[in-house]
Image 1: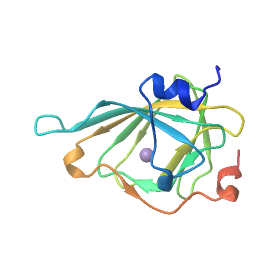
Image 2: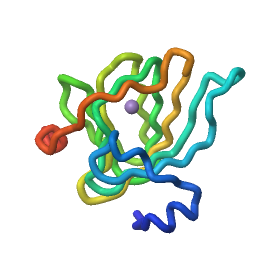
Image 3: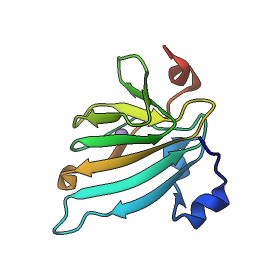
Length: 136
Ligand code: MN
């Protein structure tokens, strides 16, 4: 796993992710945006070590393809799962969850949202340190 600097990531087409939806730093690289003919959104998200997004739901399936590092993933009421690079997660509509990096290594996943006319993301509260460390 290589390490990243913010400058390198910006040079590679990443943009800082909105801070209000993350604990820690994340970067986004957009590939497909929805429009009148395309009900789909595709982007890469890089999470610095220890970074995770807030609890949230999606209006339709979100498919995560882990590219680098280890993805920490939790659905409400279930233990945190660790998914290694190469793994795929299919998150069903309305399931409250979060995803992020392990404490020591950055993580990149490709995030695919389908049926975006049903809503892309509904952001909720931050993931506490206690929740992040549970059952891992
Ligand atoms: Mn999600």
